[in-house]
Image (cartoon, rainbow, N blue to C red; front, side, top):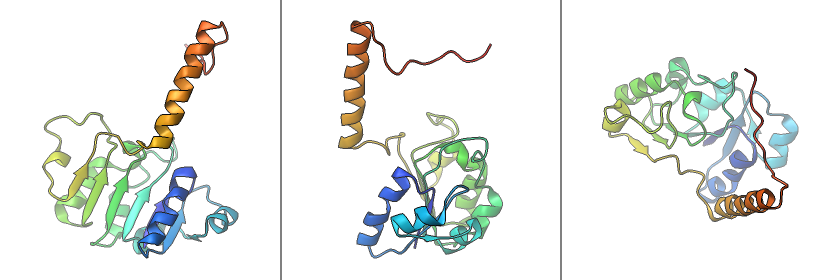
Length: 175
């Protein structure tokens, strides 16, 4: 069972590959509507059901005040001991020290991460010494489609700047 925390564009893109591997798919997020779940063809569940039923929990949420620390020790303890947690979204969504402890104690079987609370990981970070982790340097977004989009936007930015019509301006914050 693939459990998706978040069913936006990236979460929804996980559904067909999971089905190709014979997996059923469930999803939860604080904003998930029954219409969106039906549109993507997944079963909407509660957070507790997501944790309890997922063999693989893949996180696809935006980091915000509501999602920071969303998955704590108690959540990891609710997962199957054979479950794998995948986070390619944002590191602080998962309590990293609780995750390290869950991996050490084998509360969950493994984790695949390419995002961390601090990037890059310090050389002495405990995640680097755990045999039940797969770590990548924040490259989960790398795809031909994403590169195409990034390069197209870079050319648009340069063209706009050179022609006095800048695009995608960053507004200074307060203070």
